Structure formats: structure tokens, C-alpha cells
Length: 175
Image 1 (tube, rainbow, N blue to C red):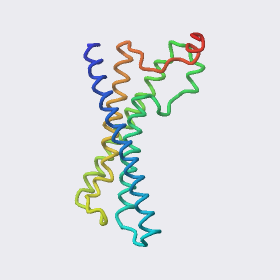
Image 2: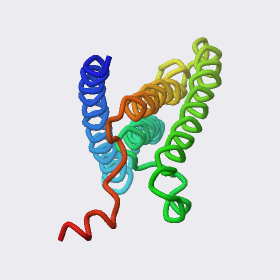
Image 3: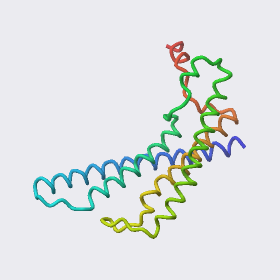
């Protein structure tokens, strides 16, 4: 069972890395679109209508994908202050509670974001010509990724794998 979890975890690592690359490419693309818009507005004096909507849509994609990667890499908000006061045996439990809260929140993103995405299929974004679903799809995809990543952390922790960061006091004593 543990070997299967580690194989799945390896696949999820590749999915997380791909999501991070897509988010990075989206950031560069949005920056290029905004630079193009500024050039067209102030130099050519003819700003294209699609640049603002396009850059905002790309921004929502890379923000949500980055948030999902943050869940996998444990860069999300948690109960960090409480971890300083807990004995070492209690810390994995608190982190598991944090992962369960993220799982529940992400499931809500999938459910309610999915409803929005389905409702927006017949509505077009005027300047882009795309269905409004593309505005809400990052919520759904990010929610699915967050569910997978938080479930991965819960299962790996239950299997005895160290998925939590190394404690600061352990690194200080190693020096």
C-alpha cells in the first residue's frame, strides 16, 4: 500500500510541477498582454478591447493554479501558531485537521465553482468570444487539485511518511 501511495505521490508531484509551469507561463503571458495594452494605448492610441479581459482571465488561472501548488508544497495558511505550543505527538494531528479543512474548502470550490461553470456555458464573454465558463473553470480545476493534494498529504501522513516540513528547532540542533 505504501509503495502505491509513493507512486501516486510521484505522479502528483509531476502534476504539481506542470501546474506551476502553466501558472508561470500564464504570469509571463499576462505581463506581455498588459505591456502590449500599455503600448497600444499610450503610443499607438488604439487600445485593443480584449487585452483587459484576457489578462484578467489569465491572472485567475495562474492564481488558482498557484494556490493548488501551495497546498501541495504546504505554503498555505494553517495553524502554525498552535504548532509551537503542542507537544511533538500532537503536531501531525493538527496538520491533519488543517489538511481536512483544506479538503472540505476545495470540495466546495469544485461543487460551487462547477455550478457557476455549467451556468456560464451558454453566456459569451463579449470581447473574447469565449464561454463565461472559462472564467470559473480555474476554480474547479484548482479545487480538484487541492482535493488531490490535501488527500495525498493525509494518506501519506497516515502511512508514516514525513510530509510536514522539518521543524525549525531540529535544524538548529543539526548545525
